[in-house]
Image 1 (cartoon, rainbow, N blue to C red):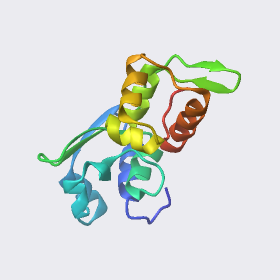
Image 2 (image 1 turned 135 degrees about the horizontal axis):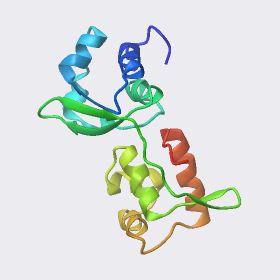
Image 3 (image 1 turned 90 degrees about the vertical axis):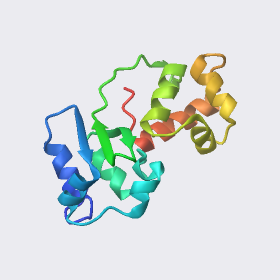
Image 4 (image 1 turned 45 degrees about the vertical axis):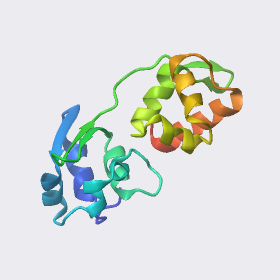
Length: 158
């Protein structure tokens, strides 16, 4: 995160934190930034999603090694957590074989529900549900797409 960017103070605060989980109010974040958060931060959960592309605010916490673990819009509080879970990842050659646990963890890391995640992938919501519950496993092409999205989202699965 470049120094001087709007969300750099949040990045620095998180980067220097020694805590695995950190709860911050919107007011505390605004005090760090020296200005108010955009109105959408108070009304749209998507503003707090863990997407690394095109979202400077998400880059601040993700580059600092955190992701949004939970959000309470009415209390104006966000909980940042360092990803620390170790997943059992199987491969077939250079292709990651995505299982239900890993898919659900990626979706949650991105702060999406199943319908939003399905739209991101270009599949139906029941497909995501069936993957997560182990009814079906993703095909090779879907596994490649999941790997690409995981890398773009900064999902630490390995």
